[in-house]
Picture (cartoon, rainbow, N blue to C red):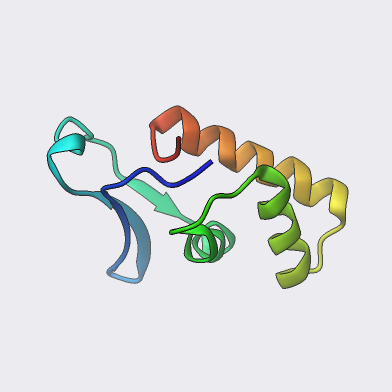
Length: 88
């Protein structure tokens, strides 16, 4: 997977949000707010190909979380990002 072109992480009033820009995202009308761990992951994978296992590995290295929980959470996040059209 890869983050779709035209999405960028911004900090607004202390909140981390994903904003869309460019013609290809002109119809994107959602505001995507990220928590601390999702922001960490986004920064790590922004310009790279990645899998749910890559996200889980990053979570295990950064946070005190077991592999099973990290894989579950990473897949859930990736499913959400896919559903709203942030990744392809």
